[in-house]
Amino acid sequence: MYERMLDKQTVPTVEEMTAFCGETAPLFAQLNEWLSQTCGTETSVVFPYGNQYGWGIAHRKKKKLCCNIFAENNAFTVMLRLSDAQFASVYGQVRDGTRELIDGRYPCGDGGWIHYRVTGREELDDVQTLLAVKYAI
Image (tube, rainbow, N blue to C red; front, side, top):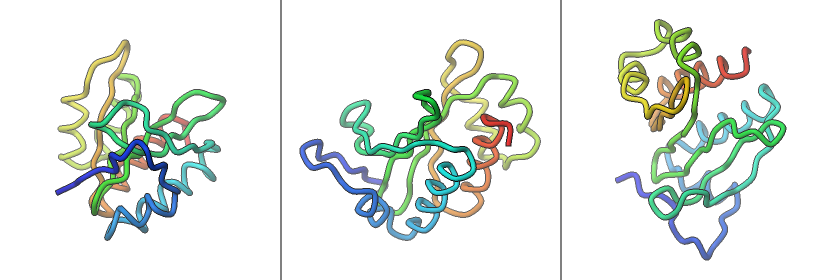
């Protein structure tokens, strides 16, 4: 249903990744542009973690990873890490589904990782809320 771009031999362009996202392509493009312009991130097309993740766009600021955005068929998934304090600061501002992801995050040091699948505007709004706290926007 949400297949990813898994052909490691063929490096996709950002435009091909955007088109692959189907009905969420405008949201995929909007998030990438927002991260670049508002958060000042630099982007690169990456195949970072093997076949279960596939191709994505890495956003970095001063070589530090901000997030990865993986193109999917009619969706995309944002993989990001925040501290416990950052998650707590936005917990009351996000939807119930986002709170469930925060509650079930993969722990890592003082915080954890979440994989947030975006299929519509509400999810994009919550992802931007999470990413904005990362950069204190």
